[in-house]
Amino acid sequence: MYQTYVLYSEKFDRIYIGQTSNIELRLERHNKGLVRSTKHYIPWQLIHIEEYETRAETMKREKELKSHKGRDFIRNMLVRVRQLPD
Image (tube, rainbow, N blue to C red; front, side, top):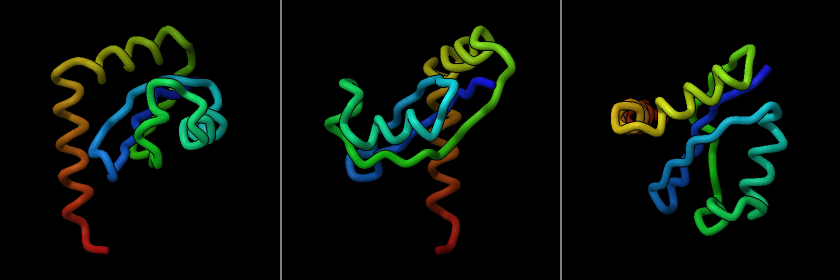
């Protein structure tokens, strides 16, 4: 199985969209500063994940989420999460 995922850095109000076949290891690498594009925005939290059978499907969804429409979807999701009571 492959996953498309969205990370959020609350401290820097940044999102990161990626794909992997091992989400636990990938999140660990992001939060240890081992990924060049995300190391300056630690800590990251996983806010969204989708699973697919093939890497091609995962990469297609990653591209969709990185589009303007996809980023709007993610920002709207963040707004809803922030409105939930603690």
